[in-house]
Image 1 (cartoon, rainbow, N blue to C red):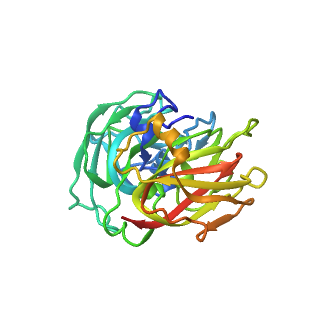
Image 2: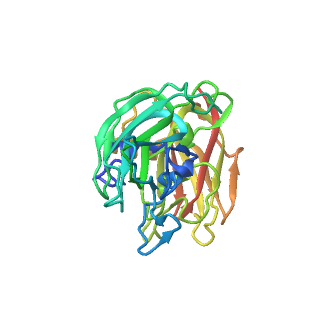
Image 3: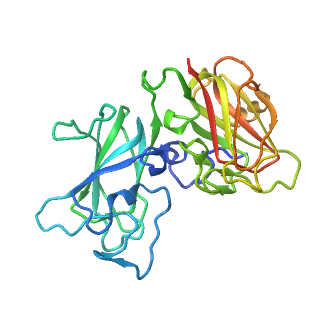
Length: 339
């Protein structure tokens, strides 16, 4: 029964529990770079691990999987502006220089700003330093905690003086504002602050994508468990982005054609007075939460909408998704009103 905190124990807690707000797959965008002569800045936000392809060159030189500026000769430095996938509080950073050995950026700094929806950064934008000057080394992850507790929408990554960064990951917690929290919303969406707390198994795919926007692009873009060879079933516990009353659910088995679950069910609870931590007791307790949806059949490669099947159990903060006995789920949507 692994919790997210117990998976990848060598990673900092903020990287295991937070959502990557700089994820291209969640909608983060690289808006501008002073220079990306050797490798475009957009590659730095890719969700895939960086790769090195020996002997691959393009018109500008060696092909690199990340952002790389040309060598500066004017005494200045380079920077890139990034729009986060969602406004949120930042917990920490991973500035990854994988495969950049003689061409990595020797140091970095991060500034942040808050902009209105649709507003673009300009010369009048107020930038606040949220990560002071930090040294970087070749081909390595660089983990930095963020001490800022404010809500941000945009970042400016400075590199000194030039060079390459393979990936920038910005771990944090999306925060709904009054406008985004009104009406019927997907309470489980990662962009609204939903996150996976624990699960029985995650042998295939990327379990975090189950709460991502859009539909899955292939079988690797979602949660898939191994083939169960013993009695029981697989499950996942999700903390909603906001406390709310769930009225409709969508369970999408896109691309899972021979490995979809036979059926699904859900339980839920209002844990607002128990804090945000995860304990073994909470995992055990989830087996006895109120029934949100009784067991229902699902099929291959399709969106399954449940409305009449959803039980009115009042506002909840956590949901346990059960898949019987095993298999793959591409996306989970839980629509309701925040309370």
